[in-house]
Length: 94
Length: 297
Image (tube, rainbow over all chains, first blue to last red; front, side):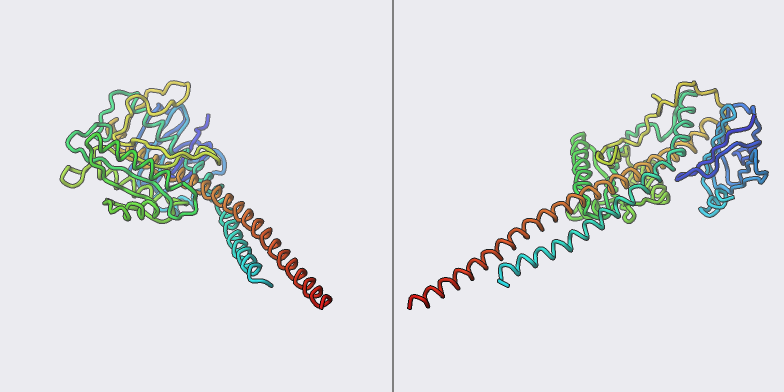
């Protein structure tokens, strides 16, 4: 069962879709999320959030300066502060 | 052409020019309002995500955070008034300001001292004219607010809430803005933003119960990261709603202005026709009486 990922920034949805795995820089160290992960609410530190989409192969990567991640029964919400607006725009296009 | 007629023609022409301007402003407002509503829709997933997370922490246990605790060491309270940058929007800014004045009276009756924060040029000039002290103001782009502006406002106010008494700390934050209900109904609203009332559930999150979350690194740290974000998201949401309301108010005001201009043009056209008729009648009677006088002699 794939993960349902929604990555949002203050003014819009940056990326959303189904994914195989998500890696995020949580406050205490990088965290990988696979399907079936226990519910967690984690604060992010600056770093790169990586999402491996179900289709398309290309890993989506976004540099963030902060945010948080919530996992709830394979529903993943990542709230991000993109480091730059362009970075966010790039992710959306790819 | 008689003098009377010329004056009417002049007025008709100038009213027509004005009508064109009103029409253009109406169309601009109408096209921007769609964009403003889109932006509000695009920003809503963020707010939903944050609200959900805050509720998750709140249900987890006792929420104890500086932002949710009442401050008792100062009677200074902050009031943020969100108005328009430009006029021509009917009663939009006036009704927000009226609401703000009322709130100020209420707060002062409770023995509180109001520190004024204003967004939008109309509000700034209103308070400047009355020589009230404005702590900080933000102007420009009131009909198309940027995330950065919302962040800046949020950060400033959060800092004021966290500041010690002698550096202008405030114990409450009230927000006066216009809520966008629909195209025809926008109402000014007062919301107390700080201290936050999280304990009784921020918002209904849906039927299913929230799972027991693991907090990383700790519930306190998560809350620390969440609450300022939550405030900023609500600030942004308020600005977006105010922008949509402003545009809707402007569109309606300009629509009425166009109709009024049409009324005026119709009236003046009638008057001009009457003046022309009167002139012709007079000329005819002059000619006839002239001819009569000649025939009689």
